[in-house]
Amino acid sequence: MITDLINACGWDAGTYIFFSQNVFSPLIYYSHLTPVFVSIIFGVYIYVANKKSLLNKTLFFITIILSVWLLLDLILWATDSVQIIEFAWAVINLVEPVIYAAFVYFAAIFVSGKDMSERTKFLLVLPLVPVILLAGTHFNILGFNLTNCDRELVEGPMAYYNYVIELIYTLWILLLGLISAYTAKDKLTRSHTLWMISFILVLLFGFASGNILGTFSDNWALGQFGLFVIPVCVGGLAYFVVQFRFAGNTKIAAAQMLLIGLWLAVGSLLFLQNIRYVHIIVGATLAFLALLGYMLLQSFKLEVRQRQEIEKLAANLEVINKQQIVLIHFVTHQVKGFVAKSRNIFSMMLEGDFGQLPDSMKAIAEEGFKSDTKGVSTIQEILNASNIKSGKVTYANIPVDLCEVTKEVMADLKPVAEGKGLALSFTCSDTVPTIAGDRLQLLNALKNLIDNSIKYTVKGEVNVILEKGDSVVRLIVKDTGIGITEEDMKNLFTEGGHGKDSQKINVDSTGFGLFIVKNIIEAHHGRVWAESPGEGKGSRFVVELPISATAS
Amino acid sequence: MKSSEFHIDIFDLFAVAIFFVVLQIFYVSFIKHDYYPIFTTEEEIKSEKDINFGVFAEYL
Image (tube, rainbow over all chains, first blue to last red):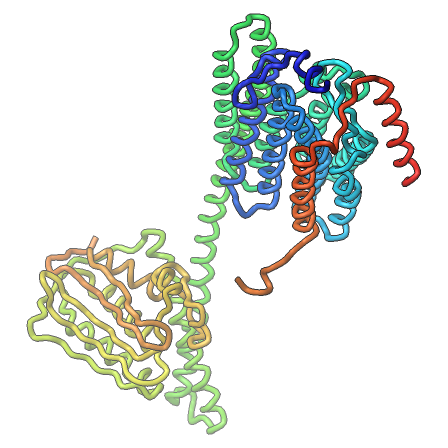
């Protein structure tokens, strides 16, 4: 008898579960499939943009369960199978409050920027426990209504319970939004929080409208139009996630979303033949594009404003930077004068120009002399680096015998190496030719390079080799020092570049030594680089200067 | 994976519970055919609603 009644209704068996004559209007496909496509595209877009972000993952999860809900709802409209209707309806009633809870979670992460506490998560999930317990019972679905041919189920009290907790979740989101907007630190954050909360609330309202109207009025068709807001709001949420939580390029994001929306909306017109529906769809598309277009415009304005501010700040910074360089140059120059004067006084005292010093005074004068010598050398290094950086250094272009220059440097540094108990050796090949360049600057560079090796070698030796290569003169400084890590290697020749542990060995390091070397060598069209097997395994510095080089 | 990285929170338990509820719904919809009655008169619906809502109210 029941089978006869079902047959008498004449429901269409349909094709591919979604497509049948049972659907009251083709508009249902637009109101369901467009949100599914848009939601999944935006969800995947956001997820791929930052897979580690909890906020992005949550929005992706929401787009998935929203799509599950929409597809099940579409099946409900299309199918003629009583069993499929029972299954889809019961699962919809289970999934629906989960969507609301997921939005609360999303809103909470968005406004706080961090995950919920375990206690709040428990509170969030608690109202869903009865839903889980009752979804598979008659409290959810009482049975199939065959008093008419509308293919409807009779819902149990759980459907009404769902509306209560959905209302609670909605109020939760509203409160979260209002409190966050009220306590926001600036106007922009407040405005964006309100936008985001509005998108969620409009989306939930549109989403719920079908079911609420259906349950209370038995007119299930009326609320389907509310689903049109889903793609608009998911697009809006994706935009705000991009803008705020992973510092992506909002202009590109908005443009991409606009394009996706346009493509989908216009593309879907191809599937409609009835001009009456085209009006509705074009209206919905227009609303969608107007919103995203507005956002795109806003992000352009924001970017232009930010660029103007950055340009202004950059101009200010350049002026301040120049002033600081001049100030530092002036101060260091003055200080160098004072320290050099003090050193000369100590020197004169030690040489007996003020009479014989008592032994106790002599020790203090020696200490003062050493300290001032170091001070002058440090200040000179900073001044050299500053001159090189500002392009004030001019290079002479005369024949230079590098072998002789290196010998002079070695003679200067020998006492320093011996003081540390290091063996210092120098080998100069007979075939090394003279090169054209600035003798003083090259001496300065080689001194810095060899001195650097001595400073960072605690025990062992520093060997210097000068040889002739193919069209270059090559200087190799090999030490048994602390070595260079891969990380330190990147900053080695940069201005003020210190190794991670270098200042433990050389407390007075300015970090400018190798920067000066690199600049002087490059000014002679040469190159310098360092090699090291790793920390504690010594280093090898190589300088190559072209034989035909002239300094510039 | 380090043991400290393995963490189950309330959402994971919840997801497992939902999975089993969906299985249950599948069972009562497709396998246990007589679970959901088919109402042919408004009186049947009203009577079933009265009973069901009454039981629910008692639970509350």
